[in-house]
Image 1 (tube, rainbow, N blue to C red):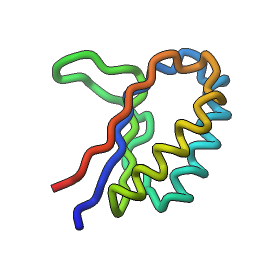
Image 2: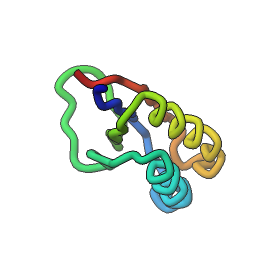
Image 3: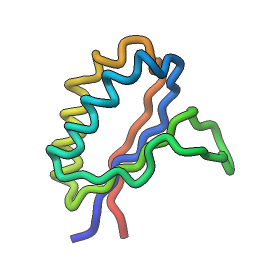
Length: 94
């Protein structure tokens, strides 16, 4: 079974306000057995438009990624207006 990833491009406009969501999302990730590979490090776009925070989380299965995705959706209210644009996708590895 191939690994599965959640990839997010997030426009964080208020890092202090985003902190509560970040803490809660770390718990969701751990609960689904995920592992953060990328979490907000410096990025350079090659082509297209991306937000100022890129996140890549690895899961052992698509089911685990779906479980985490449901958890992230359940806590999105904790972002408030700190991240007005949040794009994410589940993608299976090769």
